[in-house]
Image 1 (cartoon, rainbow, N blue to C red):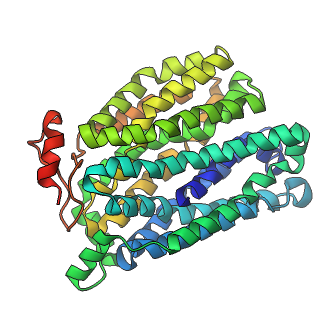
Image 2 (spheres, one colour):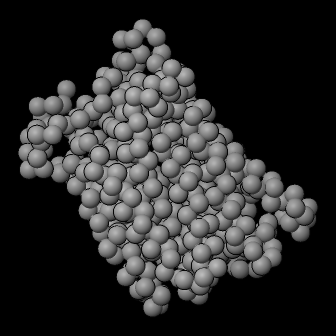
Image 3 (cartoon, rainbow, N blue to C red):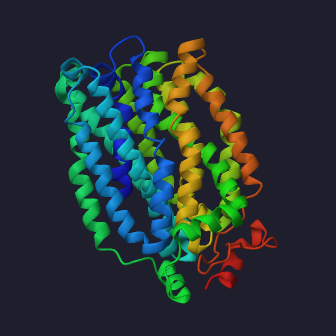
Length: 432
């Protein structure tokens, strides 16, 4: 619920991009302004990660997660109450960007904390399967946001949506956030965190943990950051920029675009647990290798296919989505396992958010700017190929952690002698 609330906002923002452009950024460069409003929220994510991550390693995962979801829901709901540019002039986009900054700061601790908590609470043998439900929440948020916008479009019509209907999806984030906060406030603390805190006889993390992180765990930070380049360029191109791309570049209608996104995201959501369970059997590294190679090979052909009509656009989107899912399904089982317990929250939050701020949140803005400047409609596909190649370099340094315990203060590693064929029986020997 918490993760769905976070990503509900991103789904709504993507699906209402054309309405937000009219309301807050009128003019020839309006779409760029809307994409800037999306990207700028990511500038505060690294700062949020530097604050929330060490705090989560010090006082625990639960308290931070309960706080970040309240900030996220409040900022999202407030967007639905903002005056437009026609009412207050330049103050309108300033207020929108300010709320996006608040969202970015809270998200800096939200995602890393949720993945860390779930990974530490899940069974070692089922971490991939159980962890995939965090990403089920991610896509549920996207699907929920797209479905809400589609429902409003069908109920109110285009004119009403441009006038006031776009506000309703943002306002719905408030009750979602309150439900998520209530559920999180009832959670027990992560047993892995509690165990380390009690063994050290003092809370881990804080500034001491942050210093140790950047001096001792540089390989782990760079590995995660490189994988996130591939993950998020694909993610924010496919799931956030795609509606704008299909409407402006290919000429699809508003409702057709929203429906296509809804179909593709639903398919991805339904197969997530399958890929999560598969990663428990074959390992995380093979899943990432398949996804990165597949995207690098097929991104350009599938984007060309999208330009051939609505049916082909759905086909191309679903194919790329299914190639992306092996990454998405294993985030919360792969990324937290890169770090030991006492710096896990901070390491995930810092590396993930720095890389996301630089390459993820800016992806829609970069795609739009290049297409506007050059008319090269296949650029998003080429951008995805380049990001996948960066991810392949980082993959070379990724340790296999399927079935490995996350307890203690050592870097989890299944061992170099475990082959793909022997991974399943080896798990019984190395799991606690």
